[in-house]
Length: 177
Image 1 (cartoon, rainbow, N blue to C red):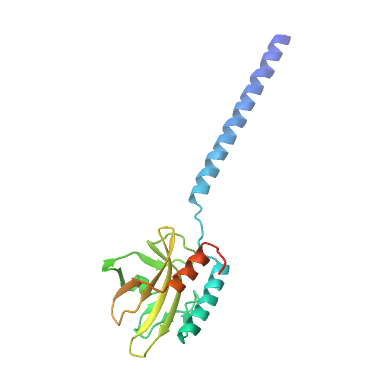
Image 2: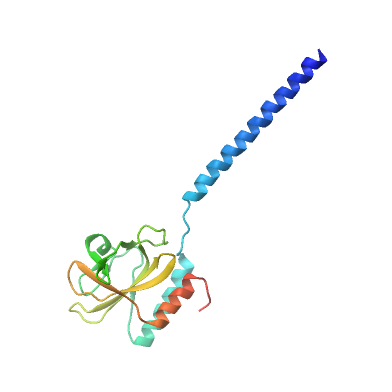
């Protein structure tokens, strides 16, 4: 009788231990799955504020005033382009090739070029403007410039301004400016 009772206790212990083991494996599997779906955010309020200060300095150095897209109120250029709506309505090209670009305020990898911030300066009322698109592309910061006139095709180019590019890179990589 003692043997049967002892065997029953051992059997129940093994079943219970195996159930706990399976349960912990399923928990690990589900937590692994959920962690894979969480995407890293590349842009936050602190970085946005640092860029705003840099653009203020940049504008003063160039004797220009830049208007920031605030994420709520649409930003219009003198070329009648309205951001962020233009990303859906217009065709964007870089070096003559159509690109996937769009407003992505935290850099969530929705596009090839996730636009984190937009700043515009209208040079004239007849369409001349300079719009900076601060982007995250292939795990790197890049500043694209829209100086296109009126129309549905936006021909972008990479900013050649070393100071602006450097400031944006420093902000993205968390380095002191």
